[in-house]
Amino acid sequence: MPLADGEGITTEELRLAARNHGMPLEALRHDVTPVGLHYLLIHYDIPYVDPATYRLMIGDRQLSLDEIRALPSVTRPVTMECAGNGRAALAPRPISQPWLLEAVGNAEWTGTPLKTLLEGADGVEVLFTGLDRGVENEIPQAYERSLPFADATADDVLLAYDLNGAPLPPQHGFPLRLLVPGWYGMTSVKWLTRITVLQEPFDGYQNATAYRVRQSEDEAGTPVSRIEPRALFVPPGVPDFMTRHRFLEPGPTTLTGRAWSGHGAIASVEVDTGEGWREAELGSEHGWRAFSFEWDAPPGEHVLRCRATDTTGRGQPDEPPWNLGGYANNAVHRIAVTVG
Ligand SMILES: Nc1nc2c(c(=O)[nH]1)N[C@H]1C(S)=C(S)[C@@H](COP(=O)(O)O)O[C@H]1N2
Ligand SMILES: [Mo]
Image (cartoon, rainbow, N blue to C red; front, side):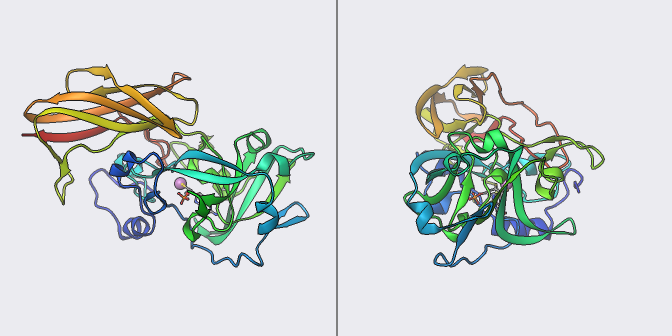
């Protein structure tokens, strides 16, 4: 239910924001996001799980954590972003977790490729069910989502048990979660308890009702899937405590940030400091891609902007197109700075 432009944040949104923290944008400096700085999004409650009695069910098979950890393991850096990132900047504002820009993290995940566990199976979709339960829109449910069979059996999809080299902490899905690189975060089901191969499309809440790009409730809309390209600055200079407005010394300064896309690699990042778009220099890639831009900051008020383009040609809009759930808003990052 969207609020009119300019209406204050509700107590419900504040309660969600206090539970589900974002990644402070200065943490874009880290190649690998430290665990406590990675964003969090939890629809219901964090389940309490005893690893000794935990079992993953795949069809009629049951696997213990030790059995899963004994399977071939892969470690890879993955940029994860919530589909609602940017929601609070939409007008009217869709009422849900009120993310500004900080619902992102880039961690090193270790797990076993899901593909090998599904060998011999065939179906239309694969359903992933979490241990957490709750009520959404008056519908009681476990958090569960399906993926098309081909996407679920892609080479890079993992059943992940370690995050940055240590067991998943409770809030990130202990003891086991799905990890689908390139897709918005809702796909990567935490506290995984069951995997079911389906012979027809799943019509549960998180696929059929939530996570659809649409203008009204009567529209079916299109499913939210892969992460749209985005570039974000490490906020330059120092902030004002309350407004977060930035203050910077005049003279040569290096603007830095990270860019990512779930559709392809980053092809370019451009920066505008008020004199038009210029190409930034691309740096190392480790999940997300570093960029930097040399700026001789003149005294005065400036608006800095950055935007990414990926190898599929997708870019970022200046103004965010509105949708009911407030999903996939990848509008250009702007930061207002006072130099001098
Ligand atoms: N079981 C379960 N899995 C879940 C969720 C959840 O609430 N329950 N939230 C999803 C959403 S919306 C996002 S954005 C990511 C967030 O993962 P993180 O908290 O590890 O960053 O987890 C996804 N997986
Ligand atoms: Mo999310």
